[in-house]
Image (cartoon, rainbow, N blue to C red; front, top):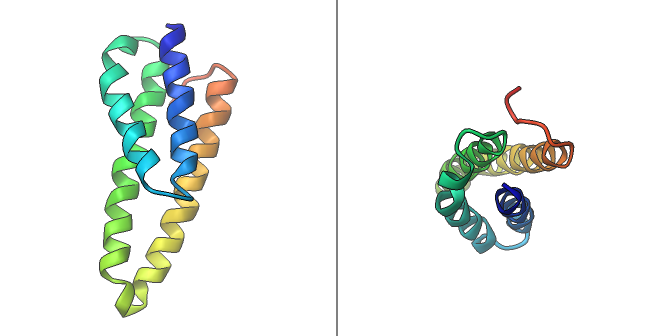
Length: 104
């Protein structure tokens, strides 16, 4: 279980790195999918799911924002997506450090 905790911690660090460069977020999602089976049925599984949802919804809204930036609404979408992802990374990190599930 310790390796699952460490992997989740690394993914939060990679997700935080997304704010500077997008590739770490993709690496984090790959780590999540590879290690997800190791944490099934544990409190860490909620963090893996939280991280994967953060990745996929962040990617979805990032693409929508990028496609619509020329309509000016894209800037708003990208800004809200940035704030939302920042919130999710910080909230997940803090709950992981406290040893708490994400959805409890």
